[in-house]
Length: 238
Image 1 (cartoon, one colour):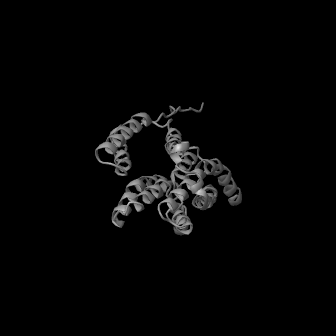
Image 2: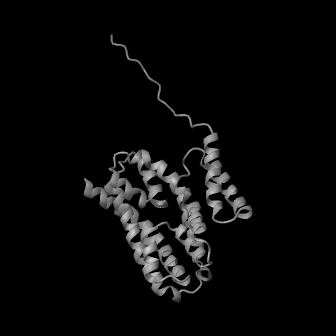
Image 3: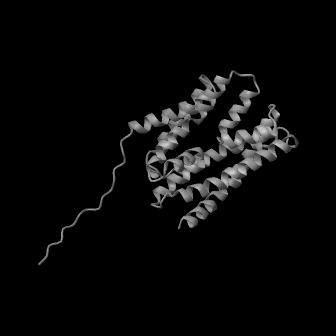
């Protein structure tokens, strides 16, 4: 059963791997363009493994920014992972301490989304399934980072061929996957508007965290959805 769960996770994560791999190559190219060696780029992908946060860090590294500001900026972008970990905690209570360590290290956006969807379908969230889903994304991410770092200079400016729009489209797909949830539209709308306003008045990358907090505050203020319970019927014996 454990082996079956693992391969089920691998199959489920394969489409995500195909769509996410270009970001790994893009990161590798950006890292080398900002003075990193190929080893440095792959090492950062392997240890930080945070997608968009890696991009933010690389951009700041290239502008001689103070280290504490880089750490703070990466934290601002990764603030959503605090919310992710709190959300899935109830699904992984049966994991051991070591399993939870790897669970949270490998927790990225698609991993969170699929874990929540799996739990909503009533399917068990096993560590074998979680690991299979994570590994099919994590390992190719490192390989694509290396390819991007080696051959990235051949791509040129990613914006010239439209690669810069892949990340927003990818995140939009994740968000739309939860559109059946109650209060989805108002929460997403308020979070988006707050993030856009913060981008103009506060700046990047703080708009990510500000938009998330705005969405959380609205969700906390909205009434809980009413649960529909079937009427209880009493049968009398004759």
